[in-house]
Image 1 (tube, one colour):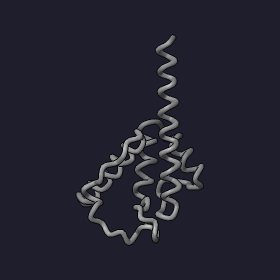
Image 2: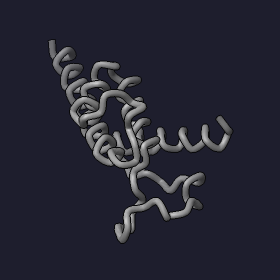
Image 3: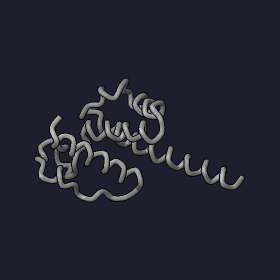
Image 4: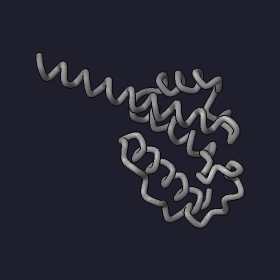
Length: 117
């Protein structure tokens, strides 16, 4: 894997993390000069790639558990991470971001309850 690929994956992970925390992602240096030919026709916004969706699922696995990541994949009709493609990436990415936020909120509520005991 080239350094450019590794940097792009890092950028994707950072953007997923920023989005998971409700912040707006700053323009990334590595992906701003890419061709827009892969975007959905006429949408005007960048299409979600399989790599971005995979990074979002990986973030759930790293932050919470493999079981939680598998639940998101199953909910989207995807058997395993390698089966995430550009065709289903947007659905998987959105589900992963929503699941991460929900898991993060439920973890925060549990901590608040423990502090009150």
